[in-house]
Length: 446
Image (cartoon, rainbow, N blue to C red; front, top):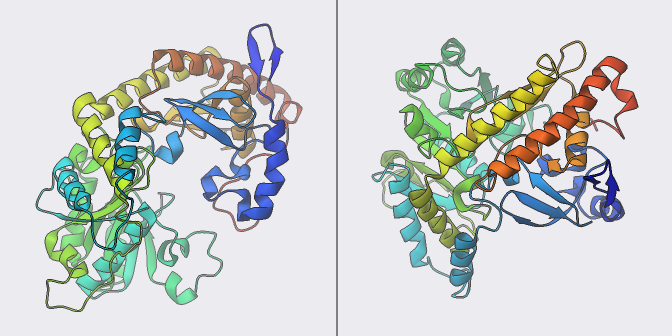
């Protein structure tokens, strides 16, 4: 790291630069998650982190950053949150995996169903929300005897499996017959859901959507979507992979007062440990079991779905939520950050070019060019300047470690980044951007 502008330390990344080509030789794309890839960040950025604590992370060159994005929204209590780590370590010492279920699997199932306010439902655990979403689609098809799926086309991701990826621009390798089974509707647009059902009468097994993202549901939308599923005999699936453990009242279903027939969970269930879940009404979920007289459904069966130390971590997370009112803190601090960022935007008269949106626990930013169009070039520039000023992240999604000091430092970084952004609007970004712009994940070619 080198000193610059008196009190500011400019990060440098020689070890990241050395390791980057090796990672691309060993791993397609250089990362195991597309959203973490090099093409999602400026060239002048850290590529590898070594450790984290609270809201701060350290890269392989020793640079320290305030991190947003929170491990793709999987971390709510802060990195290396001690009670969760201790619970996982204690359980790990007893063994991680056995030939039959561990008691903790049943303990977590009971605790989780009470936590989400659905004690009479059923739940099955896995390691990622993608598998659980696909399991939801499968059991909905089995329950209804139908093949087609309706997905919310305004929401970016549900699963790595063919039923969803076939509906994205990156549908290479997906048979056309699979693509034809998925249709789209618009968020907050009941007419588009009705149109999908009308276009495919008696064929749609389910609809799947997130209850909220940066956009909240319009009054009556979720209720109306569920009613349309009832009218047309389809299953109503709410994906809580992002909203679960991050929305006020802990779940979006509780916050908005609408319960899915099935719900998908993941990300923040275990503060970064791998725990995901499919929950739902007993008459549907039981088809994935052995106590019914219908055709068997191979619902979810994963070697590591019952990994004991991850389950212990999830139990410790729910303990923390009971004690600390986590989602209320996330929301309050996120709103404080959003207000500070908006004040900086207003100071620089940059409201036409940079916007912040979303509830406090899920704040995002949007960048635009001189014409007002969304811009990957200016997104890159903004991220580049934020990194130079000690803040990294594709959003302003927070965790419990983002205290007032971290928020103040972030607003200072935003202020400095906006000063460069304003000059780039006036003079063109080429003078200020170091390296190529970031690219959207969903694209047909590199």
